[in-house]
Image 1 (cartoon, rainbow, N blue to C red):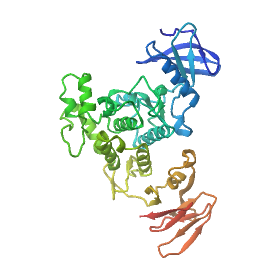
Image 2 (image 1 turned 180 degrees about the vertical axis):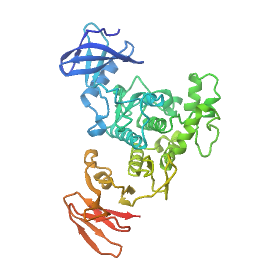
Image 3 (image 1 turned 90 degrees about the vertical axis):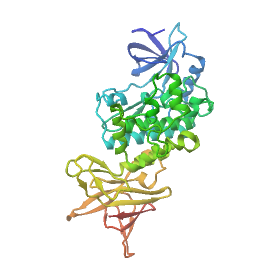
Image 4 (image 1 turned 120 degrees about the vertical axis):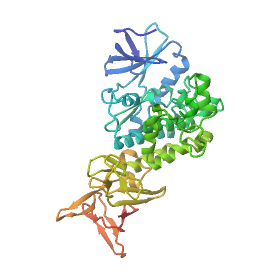
Length: 444
């Protein structure tokens, strides 16, 4: 039974009443309403009779009590805030924050050009935030179980992310769930029935599909094998997604290449513009990852890849288009005006997981996350240094120490100098700098 405008409902934990103001939308599990109460306006998801089970009621209470993961990663989840009931009805629902749909878009709105197409900088940020939030969820011992583009909203300008419909989140490999996922995002082993239930491993497949759609605007398994299907029914979907899944850009298995059809041109073009590092992760996700769940690309791998891309962003001086540089690139040709871009010096930071590169553009910053990639995310945004001009000679650039402790710089001849706080180290090729106990080197 649907709720009616003006009806009163009751928040279980807060023990307060709310008034239904209007219906915002509906889906397979129920409808979403705008409600008003002592805490202002909120959204209420109200379950259909079939979904309003005691098992789901218990699940919502658990999520309300446990709360989302901590920090910025957790705040991106539109998490259940309270269980809601109505007098005389066995149905129930849950409260959640309202979403500013003027600011945040879903991927379908971007594809239809109803919302702006994100630039490379915001695309990297969105991708990082998605991976970062699911990593935090998984580290908390939970799995999402229904990752799809329908549950993602993002700001095309800033890249900020919101993850919706979190009522199917549960304890990994323990709690049961009414929803196993959306077919086109489900891991092959779930579709075949080889896995007993969704898990963090099946989430990793869904995450890879979502990121692929975000970058390529095409499904990773929609090629000739899907194109030749005459009736796109459940058996056909099981075949393409679960029984014989083949990556459309598989370097060895060519059976599912993109067909020669205008509807498939966008996917081909956007794949060609993907950075090699991201192409490599997608290839791993949809070749090895299709067959070996334990070897799927992890959220941490995605996160680190997108952070490296963010630190390789540079604007074309001729047309101002944002381009991506990767450590494997010796040169960059602007994707927009096709003019060569002179690369600035790079700060190469040696970390346990490998080297990380920061392009030293005029607005570049050295952040705590550069020297401590596994630390607290909020602390990781702390600025330790930034590129600055020499006040006495604007032609000379350096990296200013913004920490409270001195750095030690070592020149190519072995001489060392202390760089006091608020002083700058010159951007000389081969100069080595110790920043907070982490070794870095300036490269041309």
